[in-house]
Length: 97
Image (cartoon, rainbow, N blue to C red; front, side):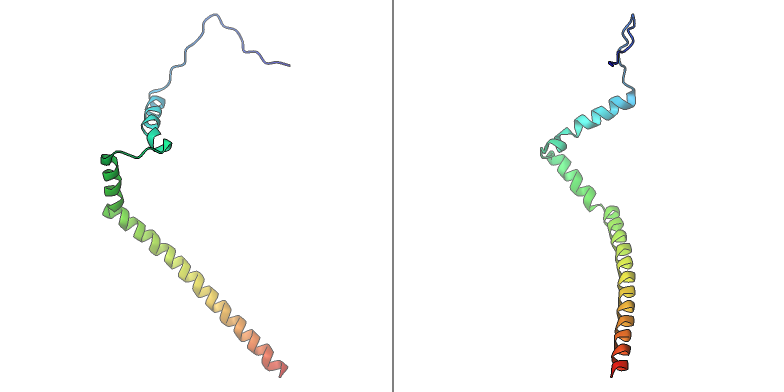
């Protein structure tokens, strides 16, 4: 069974929205980065400046500190669990002697 589109007397041309045109323009501008071309010196300078922006560094520092606190809590739990296991092992050893 084949599917056929209905035939119309007038063919409608596709009209992209302004948002689509803008998006396509941005994709075209970014095509160089996707294709592996090096950005221009101005673009490299802008990227470096943005990277070194104090807000960016402060945000990254905050993320690292939050991650560190989560890891410290996991470590604390692991150390407590380790101590419980050591105590259990010592308890069993003392019963056997």
